[in-house]
Length: 325
Image (cartoon, rainbow, N blue to C red):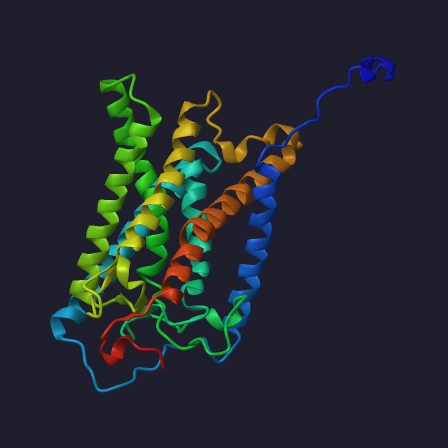
């Protein structure tokens, strides 16, 4: 006899409403924003809020110092252009932020997470000639007692990297992906994203190696040698840096592409907005995109980069101006 035949009939019930990833990501974004406020406030109010001291006998060549200043100016101009075209101009025209604008602002806020690179060990070296006010790493969670607390995290060229390697590559990739899809309308997403990944990998590899070799603005102090080019040199480069950055760019590109294909222009990040009251949707959307930015950067870039660096033993031969105080 079938046991189910003796069970009482269960009336039809409406399906549970789903809020998608929006509520979850908005919660992460809100927590991350609060943490950033606390970390920055503690840093600004401490004796760590001062330009990192210059140590050692090594001096930068004049041409490198000029190249560093040029890189800072170019980075600042690029950031201002992104702020104008992705944030200020759309808000003036429509009265609200676009997804690109939220990506730009999210990238700038997530720059606070950049200090996680050295939260346990000096993996990412900074030039003491960078325009800086020290670093806030001491006030981040998980900071090790033996980790450095005084080095020159750049306030000029650092934040723009979190914009053009995330929002920037997504905007460019989506623009060219549209042309590819018009030319080959039956191209699969896998094939399309393989091409996007290659483009973003090459973009990062070229930009970072040019910057490192010409300006010494930064260096990879400790890397995983089997995946490192020019191991032991001041310009040693972990190939996984470009791989991870390309993956980050692909995730941002995917979100932007999904939003372009959606009839209401919503990305999967914003899929649950319909379940929120209209007066709260703007705030929920902002924090959801911020949460997405942080989750992507943390799990796709920072965690694997730190793990590979901590298990690595390729130490760069660096001049003193790239060492922490």
